[in-house]
Image 1 (spheres, rainbow, N blue to C red):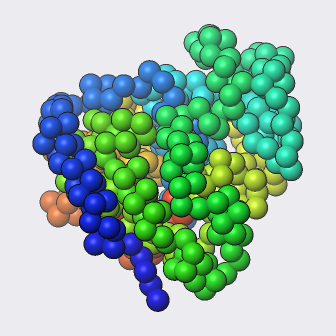
Image 2: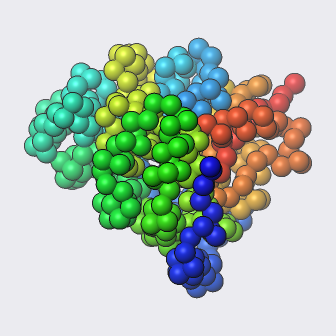
Length: 413
């Protein structure tokens, strides 16, 4: 029996509490920000700290959607760098990793320098992974940075950032992002209310979808888990602890109920045996038992390392960069979920700039989280939405919580 959660499946007092939180955000907690054509990332979001120390967008879907050819040139939102590095496996000529956040770019620069100077085992230790239970400790990580990685940092601003933030290295890079800390709170305080660690490990150890679905229905999908997940992943806690309240400016849904539904569907219906995203959220590590991100696979390490100089870090507002002469043209775009925070007019302006700087048949890939965005009818002569491909990819998205993975193609004569 499919018992995927719905809001009505929760006890009345939990539904009332969640509704009260939603009411607060919709009518009392919302702050108006600029959302017209002139609004920029710089004007709307605080980027002074690392928001993401890992990339939470399915690399497999991205690589399949972009279908990069050797010698392609691709524009990728930098974020934590993981997907930009993974794209090197498809042999592009250049990956322009762009971000407005100096902290995110410092993180990407650290990883690039680590690729250049460390072997695979030291690379994973620097970032804080504990493969086979190995952990060199806080001072061991700092020693790797100071003795090997720091000299390879290309800019003084990156060296200064990490010299002043050695505790981030001590505390393990993979855990330091705002979103990763949010998942840590869920893992430490919310998940144990409904499930023991052994129960979580049993879920993650599932090897076939039929037994995974049965385990979800009979063991995992308790009302306590549903209530805790819906409440914790609601707009109040997610906005103030995980993302940024300003990202919710255009959201018009019950965030907690939506995410509970998406997570429930993912845990029940998407194979978990190779889902390292779920393993991290539920356990705080990516051990390899549920596979690893492409950038972290041992067999990929030397390939990425040999091509790492093809990654160019650019600090800029994406739209301003695309409208500048320096950007050049691109054969593919990885745009993360940047359209989440902007209004319809600004979104259309972005698409027009993307089309102008894109080559014929270039692919555009991005995620919708809460706000639906897809090329509007008035731009269909410029950009074709690959609806069937997007539908199929979304159904397999291992990050669970996205509304849709969008694949589009640039049309030019």
